[in-house]
Image (tube, rainbow, N blue to C red; front, side):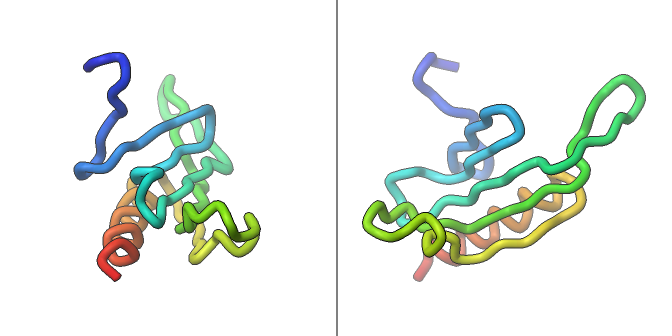
Length: 94
């Protein structure tokens, strides 16, 4: 992978910084923010347990509170990523 490329999930960038992930292209009208709220230990690995997801507008001219279009909480990162992909696809289709 080249230095400037992002990890891709279903043809969209997925960027992680600590317990926060951003899914989607920041030049698009919407992205999804995923926050890992709690983790649990399985064998020797920590995996995401409670995860919040938010569909957000990337518009700079509105307040951060109004940027959040939808939000939900899921158990596990896999379930959260499924919701994120559906929400983003539908929002970008409009």
